[in-house]
Length: 370
Ligand SMILES: *Cc1c(COP(=O)(O)O)cnc(C)c1O
Image 1 (spheres, rainbow, N blue to C red):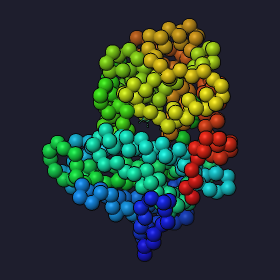
Image 2 (tube, rainbow, N blue to C red):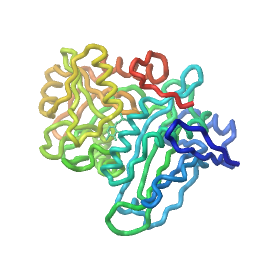
Image 3 (cartoon, rainbow, N blue to C red):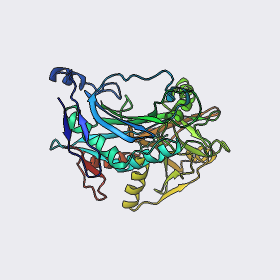
Image 4 (cartoon, helix red, strand yellow):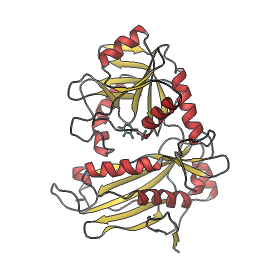
């Protein structure tokens, strides 16, 4: 059985081949109980193929299942791969919405460019999300704080050993009903500042969302865990002086005059959709915001003196996460009283209210998927 999903203008048609083994209602309800992050997947996924000869083709929604890959597939050897992460939120009336998916679509295209992958047109990206979410609509959780995490990704699938861009590329989209990212919920976390390792260097891939950046962050992340920290924060590779970001989240700080500061985009920082949205919400609120270079030395001194009153990290997965402690080889600082601050909480509330349809959406950030 096969059907075609109507799609927005300019989007390809996603042929839907329903899974022959969808989970039963009872199995789905079981799977949606006590959700963790990224461990449960829905019944379907999207696939599309690109070849140098034929461009993008064969867009389809198929059963979620293992994929077969030639052992020589270029991605397994040279890591030509990019991904995105966004969420589908169920609103009180049952409708399902994404938060600024157009921003993810354009970032996906920018990442593709940096990794010498073919750009997936925004209409294909958005069309794939609408096709999968409408097919697996019942998998979107309805409890607040939970959502359907969407993971679009693209990789070099041509079988060959040799260093050049792949002439065959696969695009997939999978979806994972998810609860909060940090198992402790909205609790302050401790951050380890890595001084021996960096995630990105000038001219490198730091501004692209690619698996390789994450591979480079795993060892320092492990060291963070050994020091009792939930996340690692990286400094700039060129001078080991400036704060950049966490492995997968941007970072902000608040000073006692109410101003909010975040490292400026320097080419080695990934521009988060959450970061950009937070800057806008703060400006809408009439707050002073500064995108500027921020040194570790300044942070140490100003956390110590009480000038810095809040530090938080942000990203789609964890939304906004307060940072209670900042540790490094020769320091261990408690930010204010170690609890989450007022602006951090306000931002978390404001952003999630918007995403779950509980607050007005003056910028038109929400896009209905189903
Ligand atoms: C994805 C990501 C972020 C956060 O981006 P959002 O669009 O807000 O989810 C921040 N830093 C890195 C390195 C990332 O990969």
